[in-house]
Structures are given as structure tokens and as C-alpha cells.
Image 1 (cartoon, rainbow, N blue to C red):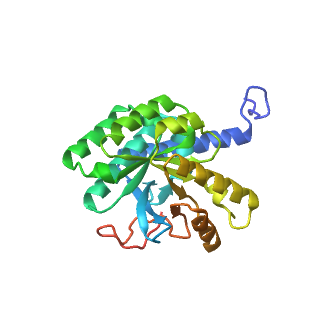
Image 2: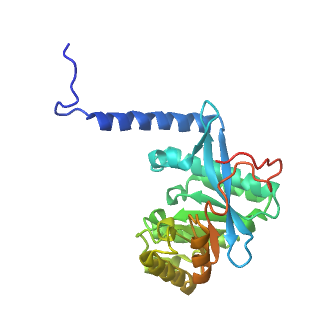
Image 3: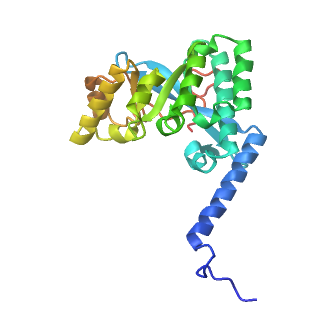
Amino acid sequence: MARRSFAEPGTEDPLSFAVSERDKSTLQMVREALSRDRVMLAYQPVIAAATGRPAFQEGLIRLLDHTGRVIPAGQFMSVVETQELGREIDCAALRCGLATLARVPDLRLSINMSARSIGYPKWTQTLKRWLKRDETVCERLILEITESSAMQVPELVGTFMTDLQDKGIAFALDDFGSGQTSFPHLKELYFDVVKIDGAFVRDCDSDPNNQCIMNALIAVGREFDMYTVAEAVETPAEARFLTRAGVDCLQGYYYGAPEIAPPWLPGGRNARTG
């Protein structure tokens, strides 16, 4: 039998084949981690510019592979986000976040979700089950939805937000400024928090273009009565510029990397990062 050549018409090229095999491996890792409940959150503080103290924490989903290695979301979300597994990950993140809120009564915590999980029965059941246990978690839970996800189905997102905001849950628009926002929709959706995309935060202390964009996005947030959070702050100079520009909160490695066991968490060791 002749050896198949990837150059032949109708066959995959080597790069496509490698990507396909990698994606299959990632999907298998995610399925196994979810089935064995090897799921956790890593926590990163969001700092109030006015006080320098944490305003809330963001819980970032992490998986453990079969070796016990911590896998950050950036290594698997792009492969699973449009599949059923993406919704399952949203359910796992919500479950972990609500459990943390129950353990730490004075904590305010944000959890990421996709608009694709709106109406997903398992996600809804998870939230309802926890609210029956402790109604106070509503007032301390923030749900983050990316700009690109929210703007795909704005009417659905609006109804979903209204229902849960009536229960006290807050909403954050993540990656704000990445180019997807329709301002009429932004006016109608009533997000409580807007998180400005880190691409505009980078070098904002010295880059005139990013300074202009940051000032404009902060002004939009203020106009729509939303708290503004600058993401991906990495240097003191960036933090100083953003504070002077009037941003409400700052988040990034300058203030701390995501931690699986932060000191405020019962049993936290402040030793492992994720």
C-alpha cells in the first residue's frame, strides 16, 4: 500500500493534522477532569483604586490533568467554548464559586460564564439549588460575560440579567472595548461593572493611543453608571495613570497572580498559583 501523502488533494496538511490531534487530546482531558471533579478556581483580586484594598475577587476556572498539573483556562477554553463541554465548565465554575461564597461570608466573587449557558438547565439548577441553601450569596455574586458573547444574543442576555438582578446578582461586561459592543445594546443591558480589555491597559502610561482609548472607555462607563475595572495591570506606572484617569478598580499581575489557595480562603496556604 502506498504511503499517504499529506500533500495529496483532499488530505489534511501536517499543521491541520497536528492541530486536530491536539484538540482531540484537549477535549479528552477536559472530559476526564469534569467526570472526576478535578475542577477548582484560582482567585485574583480586583483592587479599588480609592482604597488600594480588594473590592472583590475573580474566580478563574482551572482543571487538573491526570498527572495533577493545574491547567489554566487559556489552554482549553478556545477548544470547548462552542461545545457542550463549554457549558459544563460554566456549571463547574458556578458550583465552585457558590461553594466559596458559602465558606467565606464576607467575600464578593465574580465568576465567568458564556451567554451560551443562558437557559442551560444544569446551570440554572445549580444556581437555584445554592440559593435555597443561602440567599445571601446573591448579593455577593457577580457574573462576568464577555463582550463578544453578550453581543451575539443581546436580547437573551438582557432578559437573563433582569431576572437575576432582581435577586441581587450583579453583572460585569468582560473584555470591554474589544470591538463588539453596540452602544444601544449597552444602554439597554444595564451592566453593573465594565472590565476594560487589557489590550488598552498595556503601556497606557506611555502610549498616547491607549491613553485616548482608556479615557474614552472610562467616560463611557461613567456615562452608563457602571463601575470600571482596568484588566491586565502589570506595572506601577500603568496603575498610576489609570488611577489618575478615574478608573474605579484595577486588576492584574501587578496586584497579584491568580492563587488556588489565597490566605483569606479557609485552609489557604498562599503557596500555589494557578
